[in-house]
Image (spheres, rainbow, N blue to C red):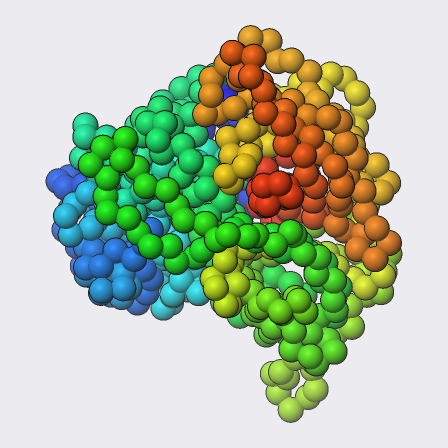
Length: 597
C-alpha cells in the first residue's frame, strides 16, 4: 500500500529525486496542444451558463459503465459541472444505449474541457477530462474512435478523483499532468474504477452516506492516498464491505481487458487525426493473448439492498492459457495494418497512438482489440531489417514514397478486447518491431536510477524496484515488491528488501497485516519470440497474521513495454494480471519528440 498528499506542483519541483509512494514527480510528457483523457464528477450549482463567444464543434461519445440510458450530458470548461468556475458549453441527453451527440460552443482558449454525465436518478455521476478546449476545437468533429475519453466512464471519473486527492487543481490540469497521472497512479485509478463500476452496475451497494458515485469516488481516493500505508484498493474494500472484495478483484481485470477502457487507462494525449504514430513499413508482431475468463456482457444484477447482498460477477467455466502470437504485418501511410502474407489474420487501424486490431490466432479464436501504441526507448531494439516503406498517396502527379523508419525503431502495444465469439475479455500485450531485430533487455539497466513506489532494492547497480498489484479472482489484491535486474536474455526478479514499518508492497490490499512473498525467478526469451519473456514456474505465498498461508504456482509472462505481467495458473485455471506504475520497464514515447511520462 502507499501514497501521496503532495500537491502536483510540489512534485513537479522534484524532477531528479527518487520517489516513494508518498512523494512522486510528474514528468513533462506531451506537446503544447496535446489532449489528455481523464475524469471527475458533476453536481448542481456553481456552473455558469453556456458561453456564446465560441465556435461550434460536434462531439460524439457514450456514457458507459453499463450503458446509462437517458443520461444528462453536459460539457464544461475550467472545471467539472457544479465546481467553482465551471462554464457550460454544450448539453445533450444520451439515448437508450447511452450514446450522445453534443454540439459544443468551445472557446479557443487553453482552458481544460470536461464531459459530465448524470443518470436519470442522479445516483451515477461520471466525468471525463478531454484536454484543452482549443485543442479539441482545432481537431474538429470527434468521436470516441479518435478520442477515447468521449466515453464518459468509471475510468475517467477515477482518474480525476485521484488527481484531486493528490493535490491537483481542475483549473491547472494540463495534458502533461494527466498523462503522468495515468502512468504514476495506474494501480490506484484501476482499483477506484472497479469500485465505481461495482456500484454503478449494481454488483455492490453504494454506502448510504454518499449521494452518488462521484462523491463516493472522491472519498475513496482521499482516504486511499492519505498516507504511505493506505491504497485506493484497500480504501474501496473498507468502504464497500468485504462482500464486495471478490467483485473488485475481478472488475480490475475486467476493466483493463476491455477495449473501451484499456485506451483510457493509458492514453493521455490528443490523437492526431491522419497522423498514425507507427511509421509505415513491415514489422514483426509478437505478443501474448490472455483471456480473463470473464464475459464482456455479463447479466447485471439488481442493485443490492446492502453490502451484505452484493452479487458476484459470473465467469465462464474455463479459461484458455495465454497464447503467443508471432506474425509479420504491414502498416501503410494511412495507418492501415494487415497481415503481410495477405491472409487477413491480422487487420487494424492506427489513429495517432490509438490502435484497433482484429486478430485470428489460428486456434479458432478471433479477437477484437483496442489500445495504445507507444514508441520503445532508444536501445530497446537493436539490429534487424529496416521496415520496407509502403507507398503513400502523392500530393501531386509526382510519385511519393513515405519515409522509412530505421531498423532500431519499435513500438509497444497495450490493448484490451474480447473474443468475437462468446465475448470473453482478453488482454493483449505486444510489440511491433523490425524483422530479425533483437531486444536490448540489458539496456533497461540504464534507467535504473528512476525509482518507483519506494521499493527498496539496496544499492545494486542496474537493479530497480517495481511494485506489482494483482488483479483477477486468483491473485487480486496481492502486491509483490520486486527488484528487477536486466539480463541479456530477459529479467531476473527477486524479493524486495523490507521497507521500514510501512506496507508499501509485499502485502495484500484486502487483508491488512497479511504478507506476500514469492520465490525469485528469471523471465527469459526464446529465439523465435525474443521480445516475449516467460518464467515457467513462479510461486507466490500469502501469509495471514493468524498463521494460515495460501500458495499459488503458475507461469509469468512479460512483453517488452507492457504495463503488466500476466500470471497464469492451471489449478484453478486462471489468467491474472500484475499491473505496474511508472518504472523503467514501461517507459514509452508517444512519438520521437515527446515522452509520455
